[in-house]
Image (cartoon, rainbow, N blue to C red; front, side, top):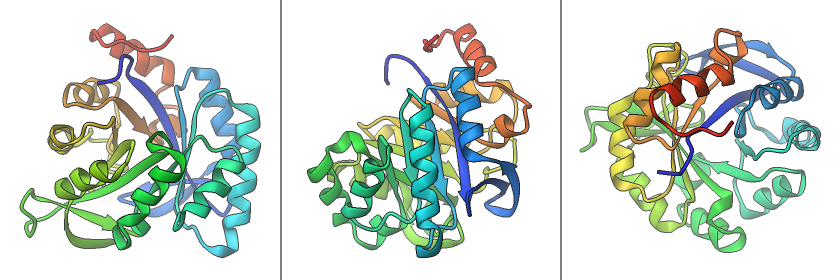
Length: 254
């Protein structure tokens, strides 16, 4: 694990606005992404993640503008994912201020994309977004999903995590589709399973609803914890999460 546990607010962005739903469905407006990112920075966020959940050619220029405006106001790493299909897409996002770039569906369709990005920019730039659903048809019991969780594949999630790290992924963002937006807690067995096969840092995502949900995810093997709706709704602040983690004996950045 990394020295200090990172707390990362995630902003799902669609058409220039922050949105949030349950199980990636029924998205609702949750504010301006730049304003949200700035507020979380003030609260002590270690990083910010943007996920363009409806990435298309039509709104890609909007996302570049948002990334650039956000990067100008933050002094912490900014990860951007959604619609990344080539290493040139990564170059453009880095050019607009992103520090790391997440890939998912395109890497599943063309695994060599991971090798390409890692070779061109370094593993530290590449975050493999792993959207996972429980499955009775894969050896591990978890399957990879694509297109924002809408398409379930027959790819075993743990095997894919293993291959992704081998190819050069510098970080694994593990998002439980089943837990996403439910506020019932992180999928700790899933986190543990990915931790066992990943030499890269693991970021836990999906299901945070109360302060007591974060420490179990770290104990399960997460190097960082990511949440969205609990921060957007004002139910929990970044500082409160860090205080709870510190009380549980985990190191966090002040």
